[in-house]
Image 1 (cartoon, one colour):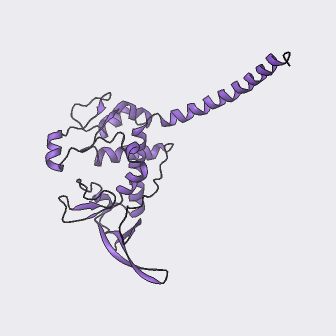
Image 2: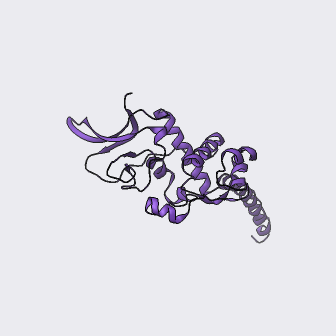
Image 3: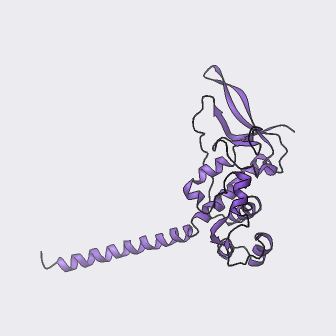
Length: 239
């Protein structure tokens, strides 16, 4: 199968920080959030918990029926719907396997930013010198495997010559071997869904806060008009 060119994954020779791609985050897209929760729980939760979330709150916010949440998105033995979302991996085991315990990801979207996560999940590449056989353009010498490899395929970092201003320049380009379960567009959507879910996890009340903010601004606008009219009436006889 022909190699697939990963969009935006071209890094000019000469180094520097890898440019971040804009993450297509949409907190109003419930279907995307549901898919993101499914992907996160199946591919990320084995190592990374979101211990400041509760299963029940996620089910309610994302409109996931409780029975489906319990059957398909709760993998910790004995976990109850009202529990915090903590995985069952012991820190000492994680430190032994990965060199350090994988961080909790509840607030990662606020710490790193959605664009960073989106680009990070797109820029793994094969590196036989690393313990897990992969490296990352955004996070050099990353200590985790490419957990989405079965979806994306095996990505490689290769040189590609391009004509720029009449001169031939060599750029680093990420290409996959086409062995993944998803096409390039499908993988992009899967990554976007995971990022969307992590943005929600970092601030579950974001949409409610925005909605409430609109009503507060309307109240202040009406109150300002009333206060202004009252001020004019109060000072009318003074002048």
